[in-house]
Image 1 (cartoon, chains in turn purple, cyan):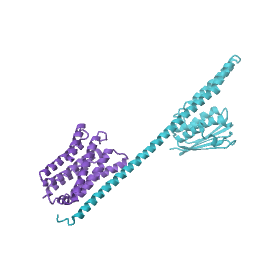
Image 2 (tube, rainbow over the protein chains, first blue to last red):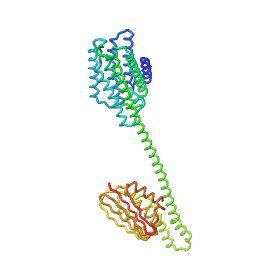
Image 3 (cartoon, rainbow over the protein chains, first blue to last red):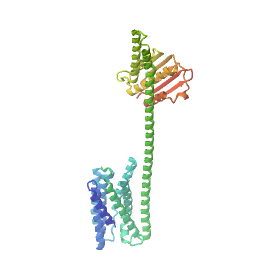
Image 4 (tube, rainbow over the protein chains, first blue to last red):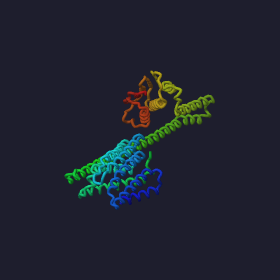
Length: 201
Length: 249
């Protein structure tokens, strides 16, 4: 379902033209590729690859959201942006090297990337309060990003537990993450459609 | 797996964590939405106020225009046309010299009217001289005493014009309604303040009965424009005193 939504959203956005909405399209197409890879891995029962996918998704999410936030939302200096890109790169390498087997994976370091993204959203909330006006689609994206990445902090902390257990309570957590992820993609597709109307830095 | 001894408890804590983040997001969202709503409400209030003030200002402008037209018509009808009428009716009886004097008087009236309507050149003249020039012809009909104690300080043209118009308005009122025999005009300009006083020994009036008149409203709006505070002291048969004070920036 997530793949279908992403694909439809991408088609819609590309049909409308890609000049101003380029970062959103890149985020959505990257996420689509990752989701597709995840699906294929699952179909082929390659569980180890899924954990690599999670690390890759976190890296890509941090980089793409930094670009999107600095383009549409808040002023991020070039220096800060490059520090974040470098951090994301190191994190990816670290995560890839650290994974030894499918049962003992941890992504504690991803908490920092989630906190960085949450702080973008928090800065945008502050900006709204300062400026006193908001664009609806941007506001929705900001809420979903804040919610998704704060929940992602918990999931990153307990990743090992969540993938190793099959309790009746663990399933709903993944389901909830899936729902949040779906809302996240839909919100970004909505943002992409509205990009023509909003002011771009 | 060995690390997670009580798995159900861990799951409960994860849910509590997720729930807390949900609540935080909800709280922040509601806070921002409420804040934006209150801003929107305030903006609406301000725009309504602005619209009302603009409407009031427009109405005021129209009433001032009407007042000016009325005054102009009155001036033309009562003085100039009646003067010309007299000339027309007595053209056969009067000598050419007398007619010449009458015509000259009519021309002088028209000149005065035109002079009153045109704003003076404020760049060239200071306020005290402007007032003195205005009061000279009035001094022929009524005793006008003008005191001024001023220092050399730059006063902006809008302030000059508004003070001058206030004086014009009040002197016209005195000439028309006060039946006064003497008018005292005093202007004091210090480093920080400008103070204007106009006092007559006329019949005065009850403030409540005349405070809504167009002339006094005109004085009020001009005083507001230059951020001056003023007081009008009057009692029937006790004359009228107008005091205005403004800070010079």
